[in-house]
Structures are given as structure tokens and as C-alpha cells.
Image (cartoon, rainbow, N blue to C red):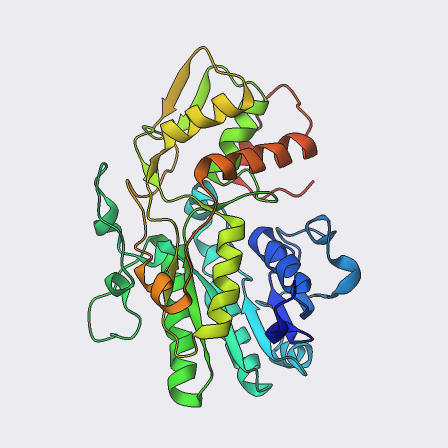
Length: 348
């Protein structure tokens, strides 16, 4: 059943051909929105949009290098912008591409400026749990849930910190959006996603990497880090539902966590993947030479529950099974693990 408030709503999704963006596009089409996707296809694909491609408009544009007039022309006659375009990837990618991910400063500013010039009603911007200070995430077996106040973009007279260049770019993106709200009355909010996973994600991210290596029967099986590091794994459909609700309910720039509040150690997630795929390596090696990021990360989702009436619905076990089903149907076994695939966003 369609959500009537979205019926014929003219919507832009930047980065709409990528992992989360394409799932958001599918959801918006289902509830009746008229969607335009803006993407440069650096990580997204037309295949990701196959479910909705015949119902949407697609503009191939690089939001970093285009001029503002191009973005303004693309944004004209639209009402809502979901801004997911970014240079992004898993920990291996963002660790080894610090200059590339810094391009997000420019991408965000172009989107906010064009939104202002075309009288966009609201901008919902994808941020990240990388916007939080690493000092709050440096001890394994922690039970601390990151709260939005721990990295408050409204309090610029207080110390702020974030997780490497990617995290700083996301935090500054939040600050930029609030600045446009303060000065010009633009409306919208930022959403802090945490370790989203599901179909259409690539192998630079932890869950898909684990599944990929299991499909290839890697033995000894390599897990990056000690395996003790934990994450708050959030299935993509839950992220999408929270994003749509935020567009309906929040206008003042308030950042909102979208996660589960539940931690899983990476070694335990790998064990679940082995069980679900019916295969287990004879030996597991913990590779501490690889980038792993913070020791622990999970989000407090009290604000999302209060402001959005949202909470996640998909358990890790269910989400893993859905993701494994997709991956094994769409990827043929090659008999070896290509380490480059784990570090670079390769489109084949």
C-alpha cells in the first residue's frame, strides 16, 4: 500500500545507483514518489536500479566536479533531496584513500547550495557513525552506546572529533547543512548510518567481505584485525525506512542515529556466516596488519525511537541470510580471493 504523502512527490536521490541509495530509490518508487537519481556511477550501477529503472529519471553527473549551474538545473522542479552521494567504501578503502574521501566536503556544499537556489523543501543527508570521536570507541567489550550529543554539530564552541578524514567530512557535512538552515532557512536533517549491510553492497565492507571469502572457501580464512572488534550491523531495509521517516518528521538539522544498539564481534559474525553457508575453514588467521578502525562501535537509537517512531526490524541472522542468498545467486565462485577487491571499489 502506498504512503499517500509521497504520492507524486518529486524526489532526488543523489548517489541513488549505489548500495543504500538504490534500495531507497526502490522504496520511494513503491510508495508513489517520482524519483530522479543523480549518480556518477563510480560505485553504483544500473543493475542496482533494475527494479525501478523504468519508472525513474537518471542523470549521470559528478557532484564534485560539475559546476553549480548543472546541479541547479538538475534540482529544478523537485521537492525533496535525499543526499547519499559520497566517495565512500569500507575501512580498507577509506584508510587508503584519505584525499579521495575529502572530496565529500565539495560534494555536500554543491548539493546544499543547489537545494537552496531551487527552493527544495527539505534535504535528508546521509552521515555516518564515523562522525563520532574515536576515543569513545577504543576499548573492546565496551557497553557504551554512542549518543548524538557525543558529536554535536550545533555546539561549535566545544571540542569536536571524528574518525579519520571520512568521519571529519561527514561531520562537516552535518555542520554545513545546519549552517544553511541557520542562515537561509533550508530544512532537513542528517542521519548517522552504522555498518549498513545487505544486497548490492561491495566487498570492501565487512559483511560482504566475510561472505565473499567463505564463498571462495578461503582456507586459511583471513579475518582482519583480532576478530574481537565489534560493530552495530544494520540491515539496509531498516536504514531505508528510517531515512524515509526522517524526511517526513525532522526539519531542523538534528542528527539522528540509525542502528540497532546491539554489538557483534567480527569473529562471531564470521562464525554465523560459516553456519549459514554450510562451510567452515580448517584454520582461521587473524590479520592484524590490515586496517580495522575503532575497537567498538554501537549506537544509542533513543532519539530515532522518539522522533521517528522507528526501530530496526531485521535481526542479524535474518539479514545475513538475505545477504548470503543474494550474494551466492549473483556471484560465481572463482576459486581464489582477490585482495584488491577487498580494498578497492571495483565495478565489473
